[in-house]
Length: 237
Image (cartoon, rainbow, N blue to C red; front, top):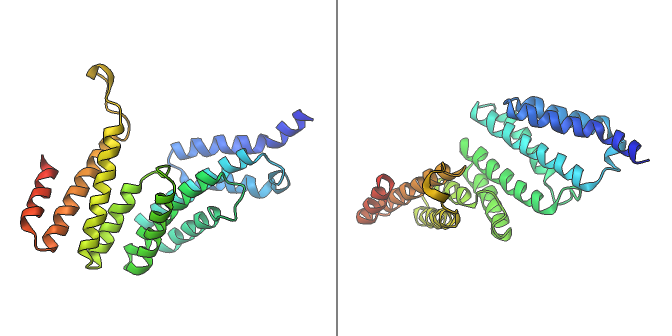
């Protein structure tokens, strides 16, 4: 009986392995298609699968949809981009009880953040703001489990600045900076001083520079040249 169960799961195991390989090779379209195909073809098995395995497949699919959404947005294929974000939004809906609740929330925040960037890219600023605030609310409730809350604050800063709300934009840049500096302090230093920096440390440092620069720009908009200069100097120090 157990052998039959393992045999039934084989297509999903193989599809997941193929997904990982295709993602690593940069073929995000192919990766998503292979997961969608197995979920369609094996619907009877899907209904009886262990939730942990099904959750993993859904998580990978949501990541794939977001990756493709951003890729097509970058290439100015806005219609295709929107469809992928809508798929990610549907997959991370609270009604999807098959996805691990914590993972679903993390991916929901990522999706909302990306949708905020999507709407900002062609001037729908108020819609973009709604999505970014939804992402922020999820991140605040997740108690540090979400991937990039500082990035959401930086996105909000850029958007609010574009809307002329410079005081509010400044507050978000400041929150981003505090989160980034706190995260940097929590990262353990390399032992012996000879190891390379941990993965993501360069990204964290570059985001800190972005936060300082954004604060400088917002102080400039607010006619506070001394504060603006101080923050600009932190970028190059």
